[in-house]
Image 1 (cartoon, rainbow, N blue to C red):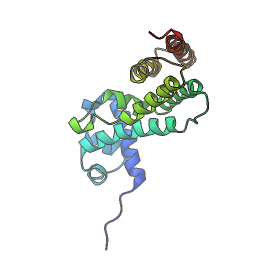
Image 2 (image 1 turned 90 degrees about the vertical axis):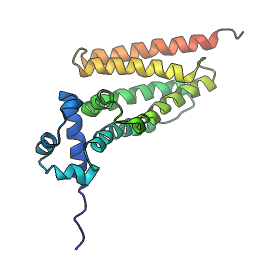
Image 3 (image 1 turned 120 degrees about the vertical axis):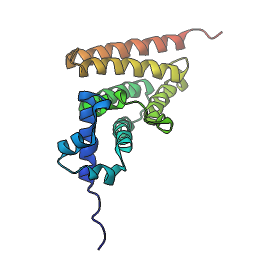
Amino acid sequence: MSPKPADPKVRMALIETAAELIAAEGPAHLSLRKLARAVGTSTMAVYTHFGGMDELRREVRREGFARLYRRVAAVPRTDDPVADLVLVGQAYYVNAVTNPNLYRAMFMEGPIGPDDAGIGRDAFDQLVEAVQRCVDAGRFAGDATEMALQIWSTAHGVVALELAHMLDPDVARSTLQAAGANLVRSFAAAASLPRQ
């Protein structure tokens, strides 16, 4: 008789509940017993699905960034790279407010070890690529990675304020739109300067 296969629903429940506990109490307070009790499963389920707590914590970050990646990847590419970039920013925001616990865990939980430093890099690379399209089209001037970092930092700041209930969602959205428009105008203005 072969062993019973691991239930993917339990696996996802462990990831989402771990994210909720990390978001509510901080990563240092995530315990095997507390997690198993919250999910309604045994502590052995963590080992069955992840091999241990460290790998579960890695999977929480991976899942959060994978959802962000998929949301941004779903943004269609058009002939207007600036309009596409605006939609990428909206996708980032929607992903964050749709998955608030994963979002908090993604940014509260640092790399578990040196091999984890790259988790989430591909999500950032999507933003760099969207900005690079604007540069290639002559709409922006400057280093795409530096501009992407400014955009991400701005979006993250607004999202963090909303998730901390320091900004009402309507104010957060309008602030993000205004800040994004200001960044786009400044990047576009740089492209209109005479080249030296």
